[in-house]
Image (tube, rainbow, N blue to C red; front, side):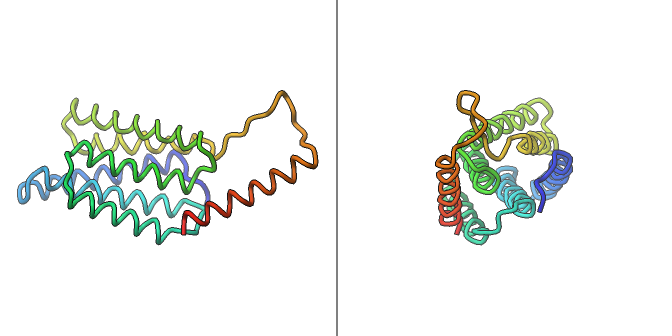
Length: 188
């Protein structure tokens, strides 16, 4: 699969926003807003997780990742923390999955963490200003769609050097193999 585009992220944000607002409007009279929100957040997380899986080139560890995500969701639902913490746990899970499947370094993952924080801020701003579940969800996933602008890896050049010596090339090759092996180990 090719890396997702921003336009795809905008479409996914609109679809998830529509889904969230429809479910909240339909179920709130029957079970209350708090219970509906605690159902919608994991549902949106699962849908976004499946979207990320469909766009990732990495094939290893999907079942394990999905199983761990489901266990985290059930544990979080059962423990029932305060709503802000509940949302942060699910946003953190999305960030972790995206960091594992789309980035090959710490700096891009930290940039994505900042993006996740910004998306939470945008969602809180939208819900407090408009009261619309659609706008809050759309703003959250719209900012999340910007993750395509974060490069998968960030490499520094040392003092203007462009060529590597044969020793550096073999070391870089061994490091890449070790990184690949560790990534496979942690994603299985």
